[in-house]
Image: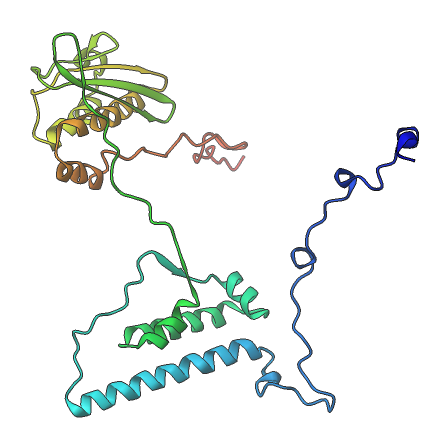
Length: 292
């Protein structure tokens, strides 16, 4: 049969021809098991509330809250209670969202039910709870990845004369800029081969361009060469400011970099021009209304 199998091709026994199906648990929603016995009586004493898992959870949480308060009262009576005890650090984690809690309990919850649940657990955390209570609360929290606030700093480069410089890029709206900041200079700034005073006739654009140097008290200490394209003059000034600020990070301390980040000098402006709407004069502006 194997010798003539090629004469009768069939994919019935070929593994690659088998259909790939999801697991039934991924297709069919979870359902609760039978919740009453043969005599028709429900197993759980909160069955007739309609949300037995939710109210059972609230019952357990409030019981732990009473236990912690009772322990606190005993310590106060004995004079051993201290208000300076360490509190739980919740940085890096969050509460379960409503949908996740519904999936855990296999029950539908209202917004009011969810808010009441979170308030009860937050109240429990304000007290000096023990390890058992903290473990109970952590069941309803999920860890989140905390993004590093540390700015990535480009290493310094050196030209043929040994002059240190730093290169960086920035953008705002549709304008893109690249700036080269030299370590030593007299404050000369060129934009596309032109002095910035001639390239930016508006004072506000010049001030925006010089703000990183003014913020770091480095006016007149660096020479800058910029190339920019796209956008208008205001957007170009914002793109150059971002590129210059990022390049200056190579010449300052980490503390000054953090000051720049908090001042918004290292953050890209996400705003873009809003589109015009049909039936309107502009993005927001309406046509002048006339009665006739």
